[in-house]
Length: 541
Image (cartoon, rainbow, N blue to C red; front, top):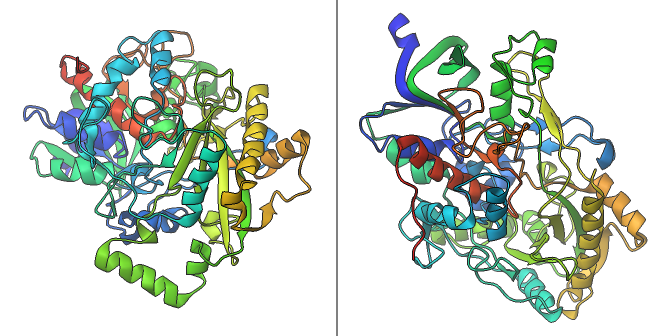
């Protein structure tokens, strides 16, 4: 037993999520590297993980979901926000809405301008392409033989089609590739699915790599702390089924716990703001004030409609016969509503004409709910949401205690910046412009929320504060940069430490303009070359 407890490896990767599965797969390509991957959750054998619309079933399932909850947020009606995060092989890529959006080219150019060489749009494009198996084939912006399957939607809906027509009528351009030359416009989104099934990083990257003898995956392994000798990371202490274990590394410790997990582990390990660590009785290994700071997320406001036709998913869920039909359609043909991601259609738009690029994203879904965890409405309904792509508000994450089993305290600080308040109001007003077109108006019985009496900017802002919420895109809590509040450098090495990197969404200097899964995978692809000492991929001439 003693020998088994002392695991040795070249690299230990903590967290088998969107980034961790990529890291384990890419590092283990080199047969001389012995890699250990630790995951606090279990295997991804949950049936509903692999059915695209099954994200509704895993949204509040503690078997596969951390089910985090923030502290009360003063700027959002004093509410606690529910933050689901994957606790399973594949991490959040196993429970998310599967939308494949990279962000704007300008996002990554901005990262470079903030002092991060090697992270411009030209630098990162080859890594997006390397990760991707694009159903439409490869081109200047897309790869065709990567591990991550990216597909067109297999199910369209008349309400979604009508939204595209409504946006076009209002002058917005059509766009059938939000990840191509420009993001702006309206159209159907692509998803990380293949043949009607979810394609997580566990499926695309990790499962093939697990056949290699030099990769060991340990599930149900709760990381307690990084083990240091001086300022060098030499291993990880963890618990497996309540038994204390450790991994000792010859090369590096790589944290891939996400925007919540990675800063939490650093703080538990004595890396972070010294005063805060001492408050919890944790020995300070290195004073690094930015750990847990700079938290960003996309905050959304929604308009919910009663539909005058029984064509929504709400109606399907109210009928056993229709549910049976939908289930058979999926099982026999991999078609129908069960193949759908969270928001089939999107519009990237500018709320003000003087802006250089889109500042909001709108999505329409042919279903509605007050709380997704409690099921859909019992009436025909659909939902139109908008969220700001580049918020100015930043929150923070702190320790609740020194016990690794206690979740950290999360303070999102939504809508604290004046520009964010203006943008959420503008997005709700623009939603109503879409809904007033003939294309969408013909589906509307009435506006369920916020209702016709909520008209003024002040009332719309108050409504957004009381009812808006996360789009589950938390980032930047270990952000990359050269400034005093940055946590990692442009090689993703933790400032002031040796043998320790962070590779996940927490390193984003600013949240990407869109869904965060694709850029997180890109980050891990790029980091794997850095760690292996390989030359960066060059963009095609």
